[in-house]
Structure formats: C-alpha cells, structure tokens
Image 1 (cartoon, rainbow, N blue to C red):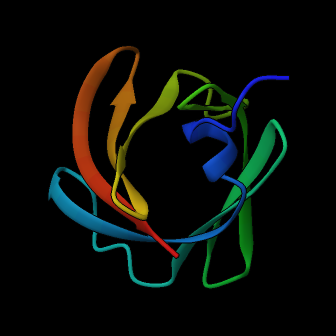
Image 2: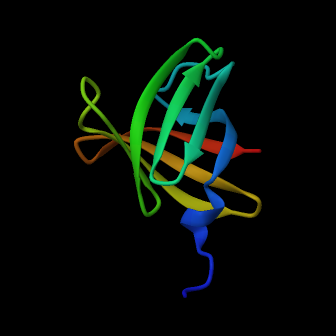
Amino acid sequence: MSAPGASDRLQGEWRVERTGGFLPPLLGVRKRIEGDRGETHVFGLVGVPFQVRGLELHYRPPFAGFVDVLQPDGEGFNGRATFRGREFGRFVLRR
C-alpha cells in the first residue's frame, strides 16, 4: 500500500479563489471531490462534473478540453485553469 499523496488530500469540499488571468470573480464557487470524481458548484446550484486524474481535474462534456492543473500549497492547492493546454487563469483551493 502506498503512502497518501497529494491527490488523496484533494478529497472533500474546497472554496475557489481567483488569483489572476481571465477568470471571473469566483464568489460562491466550490469544488466537491470524492474519489476520482467531482463537481464545481456555483452558489450550490449548478454542478459541473469532472474526473480527477492525479492532480488534474478534467471536465466532462460539454466542457471537455477544460482542465484544472493543481499543485500542493500548504493546506490547499494552487491551480491553473487551462483549455486545450493553454492557461487562461489562476486560482487557489482552500478548505
């Protein structure tokens, strides 16, 4: 059995905070992650599903091509929002 890694730390609910780029203000945006799946919620109303692959969140159709690339940062994660491999924004995930 392997030691818990950063992807194991992703489990749970996260508040999303914009730090730069072409992202809108992310007030009320949360990510909920369970196992290899998750959803991004806006004010608890809209759930946009994604698949967890290591430290990447790959969105499902109709948002295929969007991938959030994460890097551990203390108790949370720094994120890069990408579309087809090109970064368009940055954010952090906090508990």
